[in-house]
Figure 1 (cartoon, helix red, strand yellow):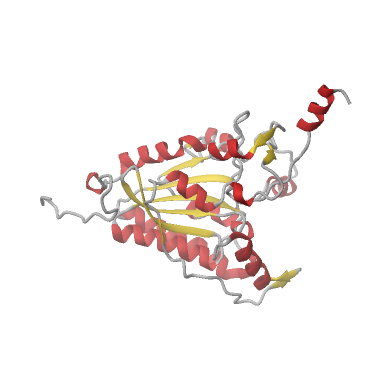
Figure 2 (tube, one colour):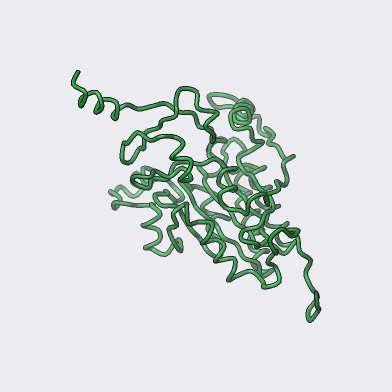
Length: 308
């Protein structure tokens, strides 16, 4: 085989990689194929660019912990509400029991459920931050996810923090029936109480964000960002086409399309999200809530007219 043909064949190969976040979890090599430009990428180079293709800027999926680490000040994140775990109130079974799905998701992700929440600072601004992990049953919103999100808003209100949510989801968790649907009301009400307290809420919608999550807390933020290429909506494009019996326009439900129609405020590349969120918090957070570098991230509120 001529050497040129060998290199062409090598470039066209698809390499299998694990879904882990570190190089220690790659069992068969350190390569992956970009689904957009089809180039074979060195995994280490992808990780250094926050899992963004260096050739075409395709944004690969990130796990919740890595999303939070890329957004907050180093070492400032402290997880909250880790003890909440899902039960199987309806004893649901379709194809396989819900309890088995939960057990498998816990084993493969190392998480108790799809939502990871905690306190942190972003450029010195105290926040409660949360991220949904799509690996855990499609980041669907069941009772535990809804409870963790609602508690995150309530903690932020109590401690006078802003809220930042990184959202990816397939929607409500059907295995919990009405209990899952009620989380839309619970999280929306919690977001409303935060707003009435005069504290900011910023959401970052990533691929994909659908269903009841989109119809509740995800789009109730003061400022809504989205990653490039993210698909965002309530029902999927195929279901919409079947319902209206018409072909959908090109780019339907993409982040860029939703920005042009006013549903989201800006499409922000992953590498710029930390600085953009920090800028918004700088505008919207009360002036006395900035934490000096190296200080405790829970500053006390001063009484009106008081002195430090």
